[in-house]
Amino acid sequence: MTLRIARAALLAVPAAELVLAVALLSGAPLPVPVVVAAEGLVAAVFTLEAVTFVRLFRDERRRGAGRRAAARGVARRLVPEPVRRFIGFEALSMASLALWAARRRDGVPPGAVAVPYARGQFSTVLLLLFATVVEGTAVELMLQGGSVPWAVHLVMLALHVYSVVFLLAFGAACATQPHVVSDRELRVRYGVFFDLRVPRELISSVRRASGYGESGMVTVKDGRLGVAVSSQTNVVVELAEPVVAVRPFGHRAEVRVIRFFADDPAAALAALRPPVSGPAPGTGRKPVRDAARPDPAIP
Image (cartoon, rainbow, N blue to C red; front, side, top):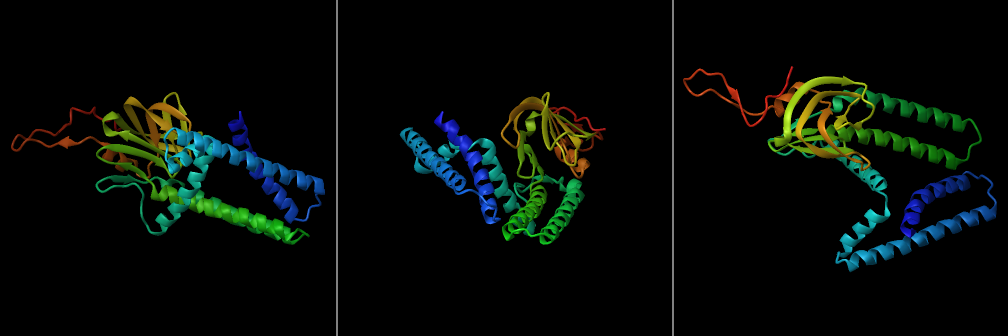
């Protein structure tokens, strides 16, 4: 019960503290008892979090975990998985900006084939960036036209700068982390938000099939996974056995059909095509496909 309360407070209190700070900096008149009560509540929550952390840390240590392993275990138990994943997405997205500036790709080993997908949403990202900059400029002009405290200017400026940086990081993550086809696996990704590894031996067929109107970035329905770009997919991979896909915020599902988008679907199909054995010297026979894999359905 205490752990459940601590997790709920960890989500609610920072947002309430931010609202209170903005109100105080903007000069809004707040009764002293309200401020004292709010700060007392925050102090109580921090105390609860500290006590819960120590108790969980001791439990992990009694189970034989080292200090670092115990701290990671406490973080997993105390911080909800969606929050941990969101923080991880933020950090990895910012790291993608550095990769993009260095013109490097992540997770493409030697001999593997990178299958980009970022070009399909390039215009959308540019449009969102333009709209965000225009909106930020318009809001700043409106605030300057009225008697608005400087704290509100700073908060709105910070929000718009963060939005611009987030969009740049999002585009960089998609550009630097393409799908990957290697001798061992197919790796289907969407920036830092989704990563699914499928062993090559589980792939029973691949085909090109355009799909439009996908309902989300990563969706699962009736064992069919969709990893869409601008609501589109154009490559379908069918599996002999199901694999477990972990969606961006931790939901898990078994899938047997994978639909994803590639900037060049023909190149993706060529990379996924099983090896072809050539004709024996002097026989003139046509090449035959490896019998260990079914012939992919390619229109």
